[in-house]
Amino acid sequence: MARFENVIVGGGLAGGMVAQEYREQGGDGSTLIVSHEQHTPYHRPPLTKDFLRGETPVDQLAMHPADWWREHDVELRDLRRPPAGLNVPTGENLAHGATTILTVGSDCAIGKMTVSLELDREARRRGIRSEFVPTGQTGIAIAGWGISVDAVVSDFLAGASEQLVVEGYPGHPLPSLAELVRLHEEIALRARPAKVVAVALNTAGLDTDEAAEAVADAARETGLPTADPVRDGAASLLDAVLSGT
Image (cartoon, rainbow, N blue to C red; front, top):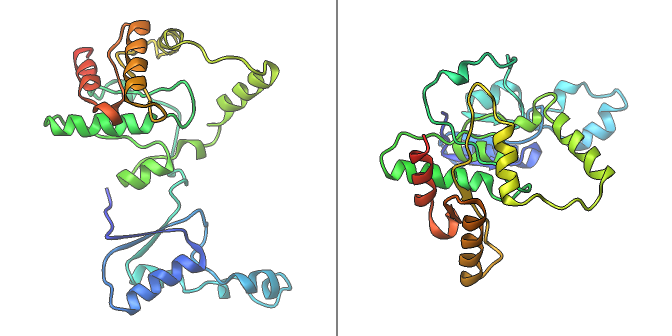
């Protein structure tokens, strides 16, 4: 798992100039440039003028040759680019022996990764060997490794199907928490049944009393330990995970 002393978010000429100036001013820390660019930093004005007119070859657009970045310990990385060699599942994940916790949610951007990070932190605090597994670019930036699954070919098939259903039935309400628990358990892999053992609520928009009431309501509805791991900590959620394994 690579660690860097400096991370520049955003590539192109601006990110490249920051890295270059840092080196010219004597900075010697390892440096990572995070960008969606598929090329090393390049000069943009010639791209839309000389290059498109056929007057400048593409290799002359680059800010520096590729070797310059390696020689100056500057790594350029697109966090969304999937690694080479991905294949279909082999079943290896069924034999690793570790407890796998999947955080699922009733909506997008509801805090699933936050729950995972809080559980990981609480487990490490207790001395339990734990690893947060990133599946998106934000998680990769936090942990330093992972795969951005939404950039993997065919990943959006399920989302496209969902969109078609939603567009065909606009205004369909979200299922209840109890129904979501049942649905997630039913779609689990038969070779490894997965029980929902706890509920993590995002109560960011509620005051203290409202949050406590929402947590209590969810616990009564599902019969499961419930907490907001950001507001209340993840101890009770991790206890539920450990007792359910």
